[in-house]
Amino acid sequence: MLPSLRSICALLALVALADAHGYVRTLAIDGKSYKGNLPREQQPGIPIWQIATTSPVTSTTDPDLACGLGAQPAALTVPAGPGSNISINWASTEPPPSYWFHNVGPIMIYIASCEGTPCAQFDRSAAKWAKIAQAGQKAQFSKDWVQGDLTTGQPYSFSLPDNIKSGEYLLRPEIIALQGAMSGNAEFYVTCIQLNITGNGNGVPNATVSLPGAYNPDDAGINVDVYSTSDLGYVFPGGPIAAFVSDDGAFTFVSI
Ligand SMILES: *[C@@H]1O[C@H](CO)[C@@H](O)[C@H](O)[C@H]1NC(C)=O
Ligand SMILES: *[C@@H]1O[C@H](CO)[C@@H](O)[C@H](O)[C@H]1NC(C)=O
Ligand SMILES: *[C@@H]1O[C@H](CO)[C@@H](O)[C@H](O)[C@H]1NC(C)=O
Ligand SMILES: [Cu+2]
Image 1 (cartoon, rainbow, N blue to C red):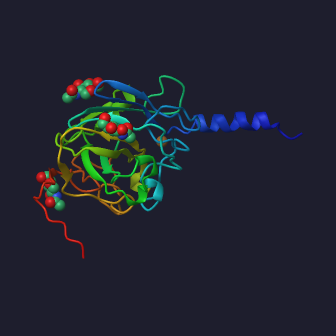
Image 2: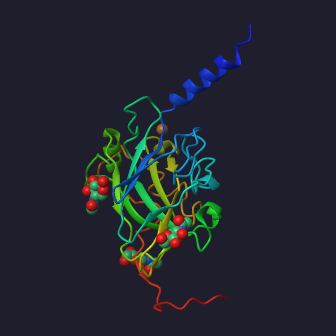
Image 3: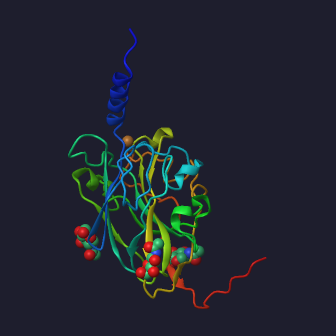
């Protein structure tokens, strides 16, 4: 006898629950909380892009490296300001407490101006991403990574640049899980969050990257055996943290 559609769906749901990956569950900006999108369950009033699955992006050339697998823009763009304290909490898909599951590899935060377009309509493949925060090993020779703190339910917090120019931006938190990286299986967990940054800042990044584009499978921070030694000298992919410099004439932009 053929299994019923209902039992097939139940089976698929179980498979989904067992995938041991994850997503951004909550976001707090200066203490105001926003709930994340549980994959496959679109919720209203959320600034976090809806991803199609909790599975990671697995290729450095996948267009979904920009905002996550099958990501769809959010309905809401939420306020933030220069220096805002942002706190992000990742979860896995298991039943509660369902904390983040992986514990080795970097956390990196990027931001890109939507260049005068509402971020929900902005072409993510054209985004110029500036890295604004990153966290790797807890200390130089430690085998413990800041990512491991997420497995006990702690969030990762960082501040927006304190002179960032106002406008709509996509914020792009990323975790790279490196437990399988020694065999070429780095996992990229990304999402995009729509911010409306107000204030009097005039800072623009001195360096931006494209994603995909900036990462290569052979990068020292992607093709790496994190268990081989604690003396990794871990090299974060995507270059250094950008400085936000005044756009008031300090640079002349020349188009050719
Ligand atoms: C940012 O917010 C988090 C979570 O609310 C808090 O734990 C942290 O201390 C704050 N950081 C700063 C610099 O205020
Ligand atoms: C961004 O904030 C400004 C100032 O409060 C407001 O005028 C504008 O409508 C906001 N835009 C969005 C997309 O929320
Ligand atoms: C941008 O500024 C940062 C911090 O000062 C520096 O490390 C980086 O080299 C600069 N990038 C460029 C392209 O000048
Ligand atoms: Cu996983």
